[in-house]
Image (cartoon, rainbow, N blue to C red):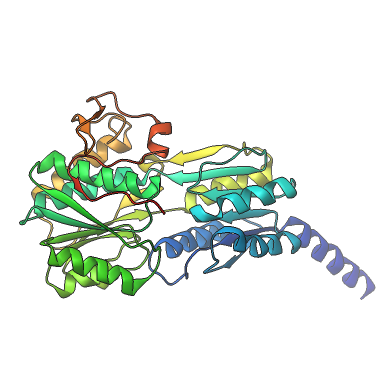
Length: 354
């Protein structure tokens, strides 16, 4: 019995040593069907694909200084890898990375990564946005396409512009009308913005919001919508055209494996459609075959690295003031994309200061 007890203690010690504890900080609820839901799918993928990993998460954590206490609580509980998954956590994550050099911190959608234990990561969602813009441009009847937008930061602006470039490629007469909500997840506010765009003549809605409220608002009017973050077809089966979707799992698995193996190099990671981190959801029943063919052709080029909406544009890119921003085939640098603070010329709306 003593030998069995001793063996059990040794096994327990070994297992506790072998376990890697990974924490996730979420800005919204895991049931939002959007941004946080997509990250949580990635967390589950990580647990399934990397042996010895256990995870935990805290949802609906306020951005800014308020997040420090929550993030630090995981450090004190022995979590060695922490992912903070919203732009507003950037400064808090940097502060704690400096304070705790033996913990690996990863921040999503920001631009700071100036510590050996602090990396930034994102995905080239603008590639998927461009494809969904093609769908909208080919299917609109009113030539007014609405876009319910969250906060006026480069991430959101870049997505709007990519979407608008896709629209313009196939329909130069169409305009993308933007309404800002200044929210990430507020279904009632996002529905109000969607309804305002529909009242203004939009017959297709796109969105950078975490809830399916804009999709549902369009369906209630008998109009079409394009979802975001995850496949939102369940909320409007007949009215959804597609969604621009995230697949965070492969990145989370690669990052955690790298930290465990000691091979991870800190820096800024910006993966694209070629690595599967971004994509579009299956087409809805209303999307005709000719639209699918055009979208799939550009999708194939993007995945092969032969085309990128901003880096190898097929058209000249002008801003709203008529300034030439990029020539066909030349495009914009990553630095220019990460700091984007202007709209392309077929967007109607302004960029407010927050």
